[in-house]
Amino acid sequence: MTEITDFASLRDRAVALRREGLSRRQIRDRLHVYNNDVLNRLLEGEPPPEWTKRPNAKDDLKAKARELRLQGWTYDRIQLELGCSKSSISLWVRDLPKPERRDPSEQAKLAGRKRWEHESAVRDEERRQTKAAWTAQVGSLSDREVFLAGVVLYWAEGAKDKMYSRRERLAFINSDPNVIAFYLRWLDLQGVERERLRFRVSIHESADVAEAEAFWADLVGVEASTLQKATIKKHNPRTSRKNTSEAYRGCLTIYVLKSAELYRRMEGAWYGIVLSARVADQQNRT
Image 1 (cartoon, rainbow, N blue to C red):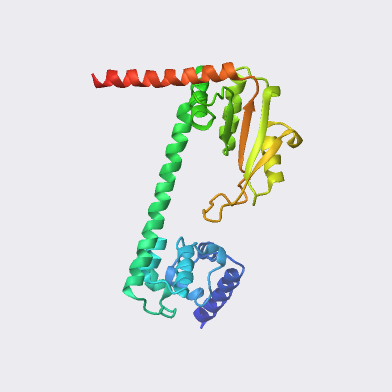
Image 2 (tube, helix red, strand yellow):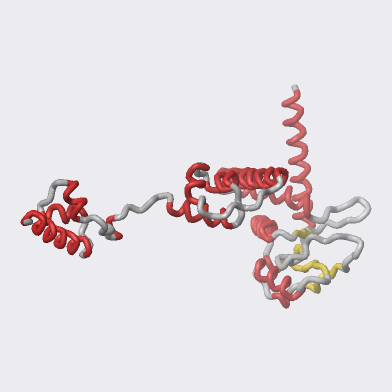
């Protein structure tokens, strides 16, 4: 009878400590009960406090798996998405309704789309890394390198002199702000004062001309009011235009006054580049 009374008293103390938030080890040390069987009996029916529960690393995966299952995903698709085993998925979602059976061809399409998305992400990352590596590889450019790069750029995008139409004046047009900025640096390197530059926007009639002029003027560092009258392009309904987004700002043409001598230097340098490339090619062939 005494043993029963002592056990009941001990259990009351153990339960009270448990409800205060103590762990099994703390209760054991407080009551000096070192027998696990006796301690189990004393705490029978009393849940452990929240702070003693170990977080399950898979709780987030389980919640996501249940969410996807409720959306009608199959075990295969959930496994591909979360990277966990089918046995775990089955355990986590077994109480949920089974999705309607899909056509095998549709399942194959979904799996193929998932693989494509994964491969596309890998390719995008490879592109980013390659571009970043070669951006760093270029480093700083010498004045000679800037000059030669500018010559090639002008020959690709600028107006050229013809035997039947003499145009020994620099006139350069492009829609890429980075290209325009580089060309301006090239002109600075040639000692061209900004007072000798004239600017004109060329843009389709459906675009916001004023906004485009403000953008280009800000880029080149002049007031929009100083730009020459914009060249407005009429829309041809038989063509399909791609440049219709909000980022479309047309092209900027840069004219350089009194630039005949600079044009001749540019054209001569271009043919020097061509000749050098031919000589190098002939040497490689021998």
